[in-house]
Image (cartoon, rainbow, N blue to C red; front, side, top):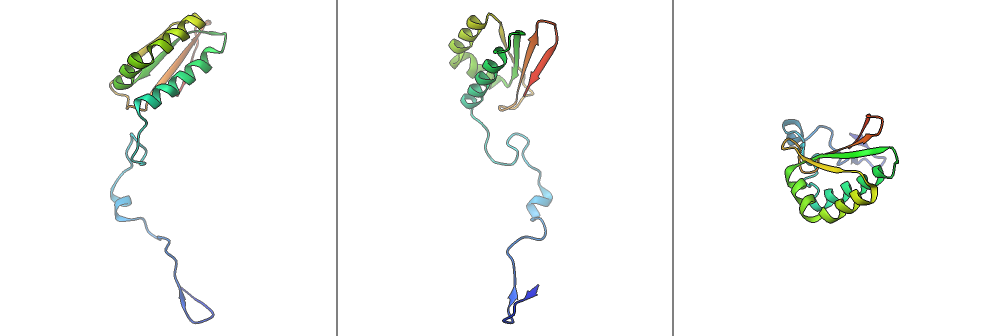
Length: 122
């Protein structure tokens, strides 16, 4: 501890050691320790944006999306019209694949090109 020129001890509120909780607990894998996860609606909107961006490339032949079952159900129920419009306008099939091992925010978009190679997006 430092002493000021007036003879007072200067202290800081900054922690020097990690708290007991930080030392004995781990961050949540689903929310990265924030305490919040995206809603299915928000994840669906993000997916639609990424699909549009990926379909803008002329080289894409088809799209496959792996996602959590609850998010997949939400996409099929509320974004069905948008997905079918994207399929019609691009002429490329979009396939949703539910994966029970995925958390609600976790998605994997794979764009298959005409040359057979695949490009993955997070």
